[in-house]
Image (cartoon, rainbow, N blue to C red; front, side, top):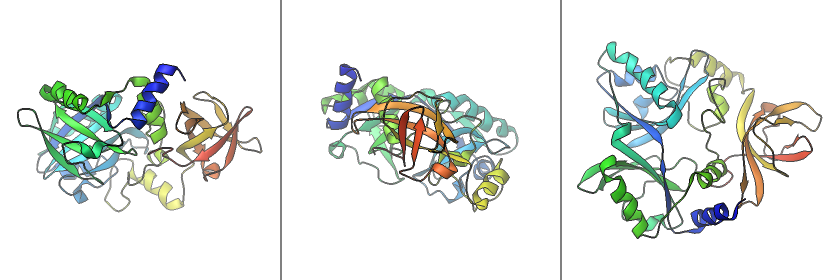
Length: 315
């Protein structure tokens, strides 16, 4: 690992507060029929989501394969969908087509908000109340504009939606507290350590939704939605064919490298790789076949040994 990247990583893990701007989509859904339409489109049950709480969910296609993973925030009868940058347009179009079918309104708020991820061992000293669990905290940022704070996914810290007009003011507030802004390479190391899948890298439209291995992503009690039959069949038959999990590597490997069992059988493939200074090891995200998912299972990538590790590597 390059020295400047290592220095920034150490600051990110050891500094009181660090932050970065996260590129994502933000889409508002409202209307009297919002819950009915949404529950026909996503894997989780928004009808059971309490106001000022958030949940993870996925948009599957008719074959149960992944179109996008999202976080859904509820504010009474209004919902906000946080998407990854590269699935934003797909989710927006998927939602917008139903605006002609009933009382279902969709508005793209991506340009109106900026999203910051805030991490660090002293974030409790931040002037805003820190969210816990899946709660949403309303924040006032500069000129009394409304924004929201939610807890981070698989990481110690929180994410903040700040009105775009207050973006620089908020970043300066953080810097006055001694926060450092971290770059893209460092963010990628943290992403893999936290076990956060990236669409187009660790998952795509060939991935069946349960293969993501994200807890509470799917409701198996609610009514029908697109792709439900296949997703439910996989669940009730007992297990998926493969799942995204972690690997601790003896040496460096590359994305798309094939994994093999001790007996030489195909065991899956690597999707993301980095060096973790925290663990002092190369680590990877990988799609691993069901028979080899138990933590501690020994696998091989060529001559390189790999050990299965449940996610996250580091929270």
